[in-house]
Image (tube, rainbow, N blue to C red; front, top):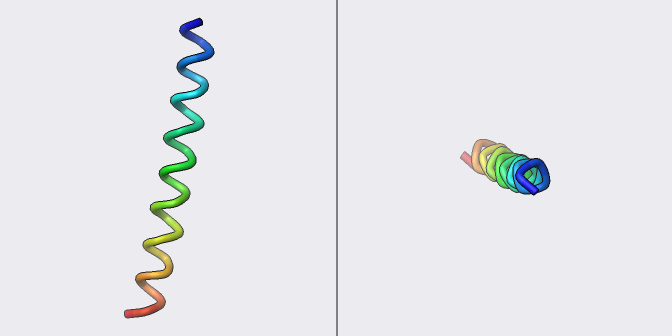
Length: 31
């Protein structure tokens, strides 16, 4: 159960990190 939660948490972090990186790239292009 712990492994399943840790793997889910890692996936959530990766998804949010990718989204943040994409937003930063868009902001850099606009400025």
